[in-house]
Amino acid sequence: MNKVLITGGAGFIGFHLAKRLSEQGYLVDILDNFARQNMDEELETLISSENVNFLKKDLTNSSTWDELPLNHYDIVYHFAAINGTENFYKRPVDVLKVGCLSTIYLLDWAAAQEKKPKLIYSSSSEIYAATLKILGDDFPIPTPETISPSIEDVKNVRWSYAGGKLIGEIAFFCYAETHGISDFNIIRFHNIYGPRMGDKHVISQFSERLLREENPFVMYGGDQTRTFCYIEDALNAIEKVTQNSDFIGEIVHIGNDDEEIEIKSLAEMLFKINDRRVEFKFLPSPEGSVQRRCPNIDKIKKMGYCKTVSLVEGLKTTFDWYKANLTRIDG
Image 1 (cartoon, helix red, strand yellow):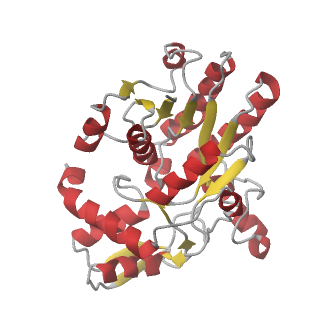
Image 2 (image 1 turned 135 degrees about the vertical axis):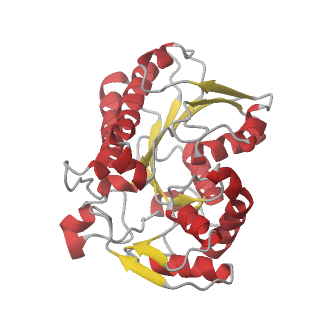
Image 3 (image 1 turned 90 degrees about the horizontal axis):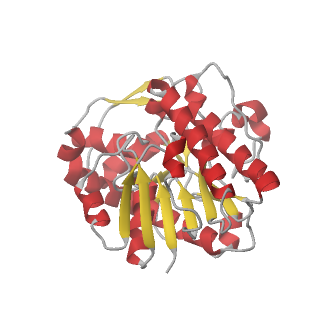
């Protein structure tokens, strides 16, 4: 039976991954310090399973890694992060420390083991967010994994998250070169959404504001475009990456490549699903915002992945969850 460690397993993607793996019979250790997520009924139910163990620890403290067993885990999913654009501005030091320190300590811990676990590192499309502005019309859409990472302005704390992820990617290749860590993949997630994703994602924020009947509906940069990948599809893709042996040591995009949509149209779709009409009020986008984003996912498709949940279906399921849980989120 495979033994799995999931850092950030109390968060959005980590929680759903832990739940799926536990249902498949894996022995799952969840490591989290609740930097973003609190203990809730869903997490309590998950960690009450016989094959799930919860460790509340700070990944930015090196002693945490000293306490973990060596030569024990078969797979480590390093998904710990403080995400959400609002956090990038309000908590940049915390965001950066989790992005950098936890990854370096993970790699030090992995390098010390004789039986090295397979490592899956959660990165983000944010690491090349500024490349679009630099390349302009030459920026490829859909965007491949080979696009050059870039940060537009080091003085803008918005890049605390992207900077941490970029350092993490570099660290993996450095440790592969010098410490024999070869069985790994770097996943760049592109706008994963679904139930229990917190309140810092555009879809969750729109859902909550719709439920509170905000009108006029204020939007920042409604003409920006994104593609969104529902959590179940993201989990299917993660499974493909974990099991695949043809792309070991490579970067892999996980996202949706065929439903690029303006943020205004996304809001309109959500309102239509719920039979609501509002007046829009548009304001300028925050400095550093990305105008357009859509990933090339040919690599994951070669592993056998295909999307199963449309944006309309995913939005409805996600909204229904937030409707049922709005009181808890507010509390």
